[in-house]
Length: 316
Image (cartoon, rainbow, N blue to C red; front, side, top):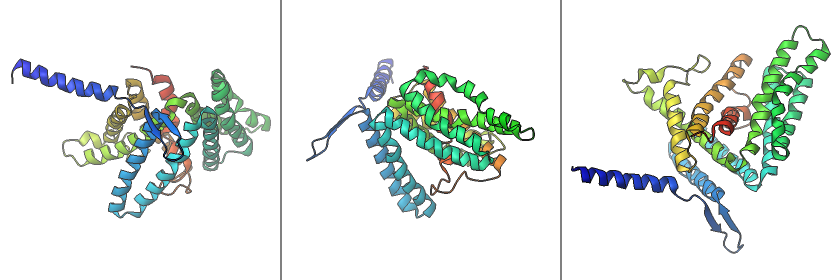
């Protein structure tokens, strides 16, 4: 092909890519008879989530696997349960973050046998941090001080034998759960987008790891990232990063920082929870979410993705 022809092809591809990246994802829908006008990027995100859920439902139905059906039903509940409060505003997003934090703290306290005093303190922070993020975001900088405050119950009890462990677990948990979830409020306008991208990257990690594991030339892809979870491999990490880049491009919010936060942060967040569960000697943090286990098993990726996205989101 001539140089002019190649330039023409490159120009056409660039035009298509430019159109895709610049495609307006702010949609408007008028609800028939009621007359409600729904507008903004949230309409596009809701449409994308429902469409993917329906397409996945067809595949799940054809598979005939009961486990996949349970997971699909759980996702069908999770999407509106998370999406609607975020869509309604910062206040309801803070309420959502608080409720998620309270349940996650409850599960962690059971796993780590955390005493009531530390559990109560973490429960207070689960409500306080989202409120701070809503009303006074700058106050979230108090987090390092609260890590030290988490040692107070053990100090007052004079617990020489288990005090250091209690203080360490509570201090770590105060940042890992309540503070991290409060970033749903910090990132409010992008919160559902990031949560959606993290879930998609999690699926991409599983898909990429499964596919590359079968390739004879990809021995490197079968290498576990950590003994904590042999199923978390380099191939899965590659799949997660590529999946994050793809979904963030589709959603019109791709930056190098967000790809790192969603792709890398999601995998590391999952491994972090694996450390907690392995230490406790359990497979799942709970059993009330069919197909997933407990709430911690579902939000573990977000607990690292959210703060990373807040720090790295605009890096690019």
